Length: 152
Image (cartoon, rainbow, N blue to C red; front, top):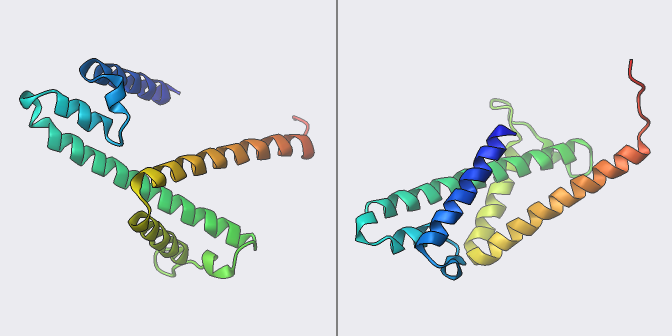
């Protein structure tokens, strides 16, 4: 909870600083922090590459986590018998679901190469929202249908 609180405060502070530098209407772009740094003038030329490299590293880490997470989801679904068994095949040396990882990476790369970035971002956002909604619905259903154990 503390880390969530710290991240929330930092996010709000960054937003306040950016809207102090640039009008908020100019920040409705894919790279608002880069826009704010560019508006800082020639004194912040050194900060431009740092922000852009940070954005690339942040996006890369998020993509890596999503690809690995999705491959594990496919592995679990396949282990339950709802997908073909090839998705639950484990690499003999690395003990990872290598077929799922390769397939997820290939599909992600193909989509990233064909679909414009704005649409891709919207698809990721709606997919994440849909996943959270389904999990919340599942929790409600399980609470009403599962037999509860009495505490000892």
